[in-house]
Length: 280
Image 1: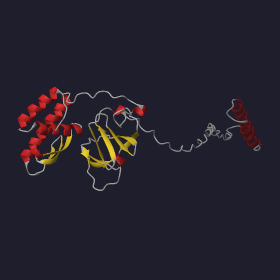
Image 2: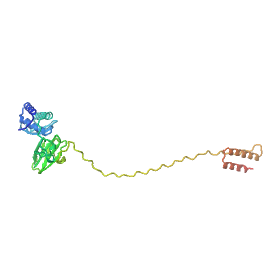
Image 3: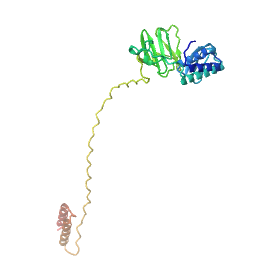
């Protein structure tokens, strides 16, 4: 197969092919498959490696003969080396800048020029596609309309072959399985910055505002009524020696003294005085 790689990558491919006992074309085919998978996965069909198969970094490898563990280990080692090569070496020469025309489209390509250089392009069911793993973008053109999608965490490894599919429909494969554009976020025909702006939060109806409960003044606290000690009860002194009249007069004078000192109230003094006078 004809493929253009940098001289440094060409030397690395030759070394890897010699160590794995493979042809240069077989290693280059796997290199392109790993590159199309974003460096973490590959979907391939290489006769020297058992035909069709699938590799995903981390240990999941499928080959034509599912019981050939030696072939699985060989494919896994080859893909890991090619993934490391893609991460540390300039494998593909830079593409000459094309003239950018109206709407950001290049003169030679149908996708928006701001998306950069795709890792894979093709067509199926009357639609064209271009995959941009570096910016997590997928461009699809159908009936002259180009749509751009955010691929999110999908690492697209290939296009799902469809038999008798609807015109313009495409399905892709990633580490999450098969998916189509209905599960992706459409960004339009213009390239967007790598981190899309989050959609604004939905507006909810304002919660009803309730009037605050009225605050009542606290009830006044009254000082307890003073408790007065009961007035002393005085019994008229019994007459001793003198006449009853003298004793009553002496008792009234004693009560008058208590009244003047405030010990007896006016009513109490008047009541006792009346009782004593009633004995005369």
